[in-house]
Length: 521
Ligand SMILES: Cc1cc2nc3c(=O)[nH]c(=O)nc-3n(C[C@H](O)[C@H](O)[C@H](O)COP(=O)(O)OP(=O)(O)OC[C@H]3O[C@@H](n4cnc5c(N)ncnc54)[C@H](O)[C@@H]3O)c2cc1C
Image (cartoon, rainbow, N blue to C red; front, side, top):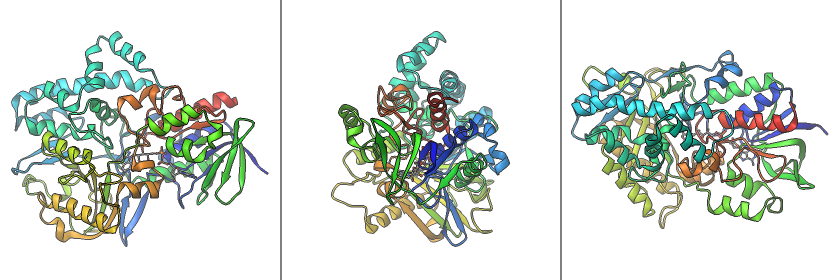
């Protein structure tokens, strides 16, 4: 029987990144993925003949340039490009705001339409995020800092007040410090709420915004988001190709039933088909709840550790993803006359007109209801990537919040899925009336579907919320945040480890370094 140096439980992008780094260091590595293809939440699929979408994750910024370079992903066809405009915000009164990431002057002109004072403050806003990123970015590619050490770094730089703003304020309070226009505030708010069970008035939300502002995948430009040619599946297919070239063995449709424990040490895995495979290290790409509560024998972990993962680690699902095949792009009534749908739809379109709107969407969720007026983030890759749809046709994704995993008194049956898809499309139609007649096919993914399809416990897209209390050396829980776990030989290499979710590759990279240290390079 072959014994591996390392088994990677799960072939998400982080598992593949970990596999590549281990194999590059000469280790014999096996990846076991339960689904019929690798990729986890980063896959591209055809949802209707001729229409391909990034099924779950859809947009790129976070993948570390070091990883892209060291794994030579460009040689395997990895290609990213920026969205421009970055954002188009249509408002109910027919006005609009466009954002251009990395182009402050152009963005300021847009903001000045709503408030000259806000336009003047925009530099201060961007400078604030730059300072926070300057402190945190250099810490990403290694073991997590403690919150105290982080606060010290801010103090040492003379930016102690930024720590207060970033970690302790709500996004609403932070926005009040910089801006006066409700529309400008609403434009800046959405990224602070992504996959977070929180509204703009909830403390800790600025840190979620930072998570979305720190990426550099596109030409090293911080905070710029864009697309991967061929959709997000191209990320994981290129990683898999790189891994195979490095000698990694990848098995798909290979579900792990349990981590094998012998003499108090993880020594391999038992597959759902009963086979067992041995290795000196097991790296779990599955989320912490699945890893520790379902896949590791209870007797192999301290009871209080299991209890903290079960009771304290939050994996609230908030997202409903609706992927559409369209006969034509939405025509937004608020779009400027000189910007045809193909240009407007290059950017992210957010339906989130005021902070009050977002807070009300969250209020419904708090009561256990699906938001009556949801926050809808709209993406369309087909205007800039002809591989996604046939000429003249389009794909479009609506990433929507807030939708509970278990809405009061309802189950996510087909009736509820359809009802919510109608609700979302009707909301978009308030801004782009042609959308109702343009839909050819729709793929509906409620939180329970994200869990069933991708193995994301609770439907949480990040393997656990990314609030400050679940970040840095508190992720997933204090005392188990350096990729090692209380079970010797078992490591976490996915988004449940620092720095968390998003297609960054960082947890995979960092976990591999820790494993290499433990195994000997
Ligand atoms: C709807 C949605 C939208 C998102 N949008 C974005 C975005 O635009 N940009 C962005 O950067 N991030 C986005 N994210 C987040 C991002 O996709 C994830 O954080 C990231 O893909 C997680 O990668 P991972 O490798 O850590 O884990 P995963 O991708 O979750 O991979 C884990 C893998 O483990 C496998 N697995 C689990 N259990 C077993 C088992 N028992 N045996 C074998 N295999 C197993 C799973 O099948 C899966 O393939 C989004 C996520 C979702 C769901």
